[in-house]
Length: 368
Ligand code: FNR
Image (tube, rainbow, N blue to C red; front, side, top):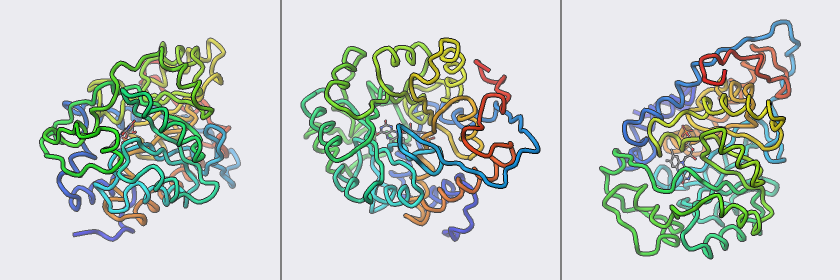
């Protein structure tokens, strides 16, 4: 029933295989979106509203797709975004993603709610390999402070504070399955207060502080030297506010469609944000990332043309890992690199610096 790995030709193929081989509860947790999953579907479809305007007769014999993210040089402008509970899909959990990220010289964002402990994931990295931390802020700030200080001491290079989840969304596929498998990290944060009757997401999230607000951001800036990035920003006013409070970046994201259903896609928000930043001379004041629905190198290219520094990719690596382990993650990343090189040639861009808004027709998006 398992097709050989070589028969996966794109990121969607891994999902189709994973669906057949994964445990039902794991599939439900990874694949679900909030409510009617309209945002989840829109995340990928929104890229189809953007068309390329390639240049011809550009020398693209050599194509360089490397770039930097928060000062780290990477092979290709995507990172492995934080997704909780890696061991639902594969025995090795997040460590499997660490190894894939190393092989392809991309950055891994470690989730607060990893199945492996934070230290296990840091230990799995090779010297020089860069990792970031995704932070769910605990009502008990002492716990959060310890996590942040520990991450910095261990050499983490970025702190991504999730701001789109004061309460976890209703993912009904997930809620229908009873959850039993909390990892050590999850237990440490939630204590014994775990209600397992409403799916994985709800079981693991009771500690998250819905009172978190802009007033807290200066405190985070005061307790760490790591760059701070707000993950889950969805409108230009909040990007301007992020610049004002002095954080280093934002991820325009709707949490993979798992939070507010009918929220806009990251690429749509990007098209709203960038013209305003350019108008105000703020386009380099902050690094802008997007995530959600990125499945093709063309999606990555569209985001970069419109002004993103990089993109996060979540589910495809979970599905590749669940179906084929490290070999799957490796192939998924290799396929993206292959697609990226070809498509840069086809749009007439020899390097990331060549990507600009003129290479796309984004009139289908609101800011376009
Ligand atoms: C997530 N995401 C997420 N985000 C976060 O800040 N903390 C978390 O613990 C998780 N956990 C999580 C679990 C699973 C199974 C998924 C699919 C997603 C959201 C994630 O970081 C990212 O925003 C989306 O996954 C991006 O969309 P795609 O690439 O999955 O379409």
